[in-house]
Length: 469
Image (cartoon, one colour):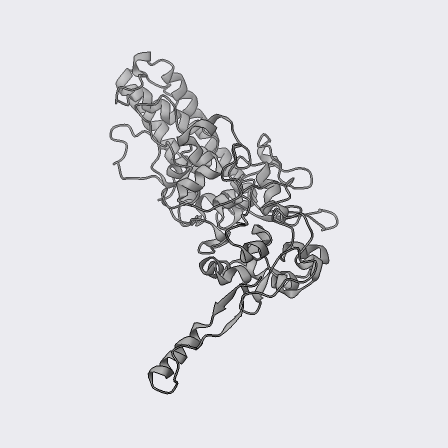
């Protein structure tokens, strides 16, 4: 069975002529096949209906999605491969329509036919064969998978893995790629901890295979990347260079509790965005005006990528003796300074000395060398550790009645404790050492005023870390 469409340009021309009295007819229609029957062995994959215009058969109906897809790298995947210096036959399955990337297991598309209509990563590469849907749309809805993983035979991970393209390999070992059981049953938590909850919070209403499954899904590729849209770089759903917690992709989740809440006894939770932008923490009286900020260099135009500028860094690992390629690091472990194995490949652990970490991502327009970045981190950590130790000791001396939840009041003790927890969070010395130091000093001073507790005279309460702004 074949579907047909009308050439409305011819119909309009005929109508104009008829109106002018040149033709004794009302309308002329021209029909033509919407798609050609797939060749033998194609496994019901349809591919392009017009390869020159980058028009897959699916795009004849799904016009909006096709127009957006044409702007993505997927639409030029075959040309990219051929233009590379390392194109080989085994690469082709990921640069064409095939059984790779979708739920189909039967070989088909390009590998089975070598028909040019299957070149590039088209709709069917993710959604699977379209013949049944095109011939009977109501009976078949080919849906893509939201899952990712190196052990799957479906989804992004089938191609975006391995030493050449190891996005999913790194993601699998990241916090995004693991599922903490604690937040799964809490509605306010799944908005950031579960893929479907995050997509719903983003306003995404797309359909996919696992939409109704009972098992929770971690934050997969398609949560952050839009398969159909290249409006933002790398097909991200939201920009990463906007210093706004409501608009920045990373900060949409990493900004949940950056100031103390009188109804909660918990400390900070995912405060990285506001900390980077300089407005996190409890502000003692006379600290700063409510709208004033202390912004570190990492939160300014010197680091246009903001969160991703440090946490998503790619580089090549080569053999020290031969220069041979070992691994292409994609930055999808999301570790700013990852630990390295003896070959220089990032490890999933973060428990290693500074000397065994790479600070390569810090040298791109900011620090002059990895050694300079390590030194800067050492200096700020030593300074903040002194202040943290002292404030910790002072808070231990404050009466318990100063820590009461639900009284619609943030006492000096509660505010100082919140700032202490903020300073202790992993990454805080890097996200904004200047704000953290200022908050710790102000908290120590306020504790002294309100509770009569004083730090040792040897402790300097002058700011020693300065942003230069």
